[in-house]
Length: 258
Image (cartoon, rainbow, N blue to C red; front, side):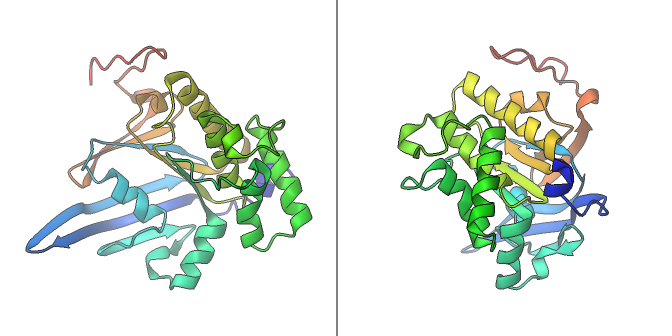
């Protein structure tokens, strides 16, 4: 069985994510904030999608809806054809554990555990036997370039290495999608570029859909599609090959023509 089949055995569902007319309102006293205003989005299996938009655009809210971290006020969110907004807390926890991997800008790995133990943890929660979890964790850590750091704790690793551990952990349970929330925000330019390339490499090797909410225009270089969010709605979705923006080398970006 190929690595792609091992990690994503159900390849019959063409669209990994479908967001249908999703609205989200937050009530603060007498004020209603419309964070999302009827968003529709379809993400094909294996796609690397970046969600870009200014602060307050609704980018993070949409990200949280797809990840099951928040529920829409109206509309539906489907992961592998399951409407996650209709799941009870137990079902949603099962879905998040087995179908969704998360990568956060602050890494969120446990400081007292080694890299190996951090990557094993979600597998243990999912009921994977310890020996299998250990073997899989070593394999994934090797894929992200940490084969020689499996017994190191976060205090013994750089920020970039800690984020690699977080990436490995996100892929540990062979998820349907991996959600990366500003994965390069706390990293320098060169390390951020390495993390972006690792995410793309894992996306291509495993066939897992990657969705990143980001301000980092370097992410455009590796994205299949970019969803531009503004004022609680998707302004446009572009394929990488059709982008007008040109991302330069690590030194900066050329935004001419946008």
